[in-house]
Length: 99
Image 1 (cartoon, one colour):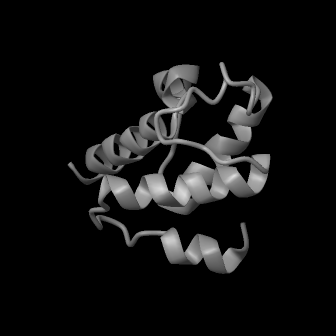
Image 2 (tube, helix red, strand yellow):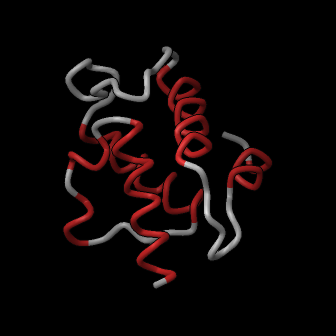
Image 3 (spheres, helix red, strand yellow):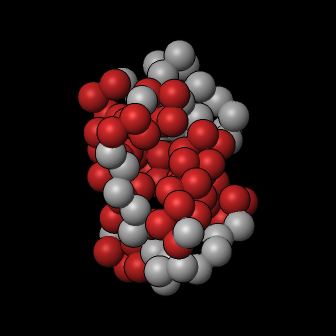
């Protein structure tokens, strides 16, 4: 993903994002990275598209694209298993940062 694309999806602090917008951006990022189409409810690890090592790249991408910090208990693999799970994580972390 280019810097321009990161800026395009990066929200302003406190800005609410629709889950569909986050999922769409993540699907685009993953498709470009793993060179395969990805469904929002597809188990990325069980399908063999990504490895646990790739999960760290997902952490870095989510943190930079959505201005969040993924630490401690949020680093569990289940938060990165599907696009839906990652979008939920982003929304949850942004909401807790605002609240």
